[in-house]
Length: 221
Image (cartoon, rainbow, N blue to C red; front, side, top):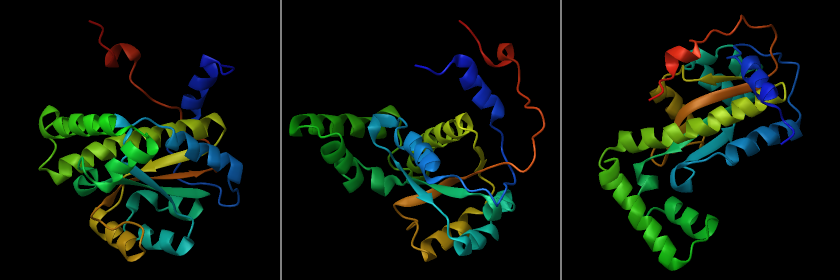
């Protein structure tokens, strides 16, 4: 690897929740393709990729979301690229669902006996290991936690090439979901919004980053 540890740490120091972007500057297509690829390559439980990414460039839909997205009042109109992170629901993540079986058979290309075994292990995980089945909110939250792995990886990758970002949870879920359904972006049944993230170039430098010292957050046993 040609990247040094200090370069990686500098990317984390550079990254901040950028609340307003330079609307005149657009991220080149090849740079944003790189950011999306880091999301695509992100890990997920069982490799089931329970997320969907929607790159929202339509200014009309952005403005519709803005009415109920208090955490993106300046980022929605100024971001070069705006991404919606959708997570699959319980209906879409049961062991026999189309999505799970598509991943097992078509993406992971497991032979029939291995596919059956993985389906069985996954069912046990949902039913007893984590006790998720039977709670739609629990399954959706589990999928959303994994979507955040892709979110973090994309923001770090962006920072490493000098691109700013801002993760956004500041929105009213019901009216925002209504807009997404009206626009055909999410059906509200198999895919639901868990977070948003804006990308672009800062218009001003942020204040110094503050974090707890490592001794306060890490315990060695």
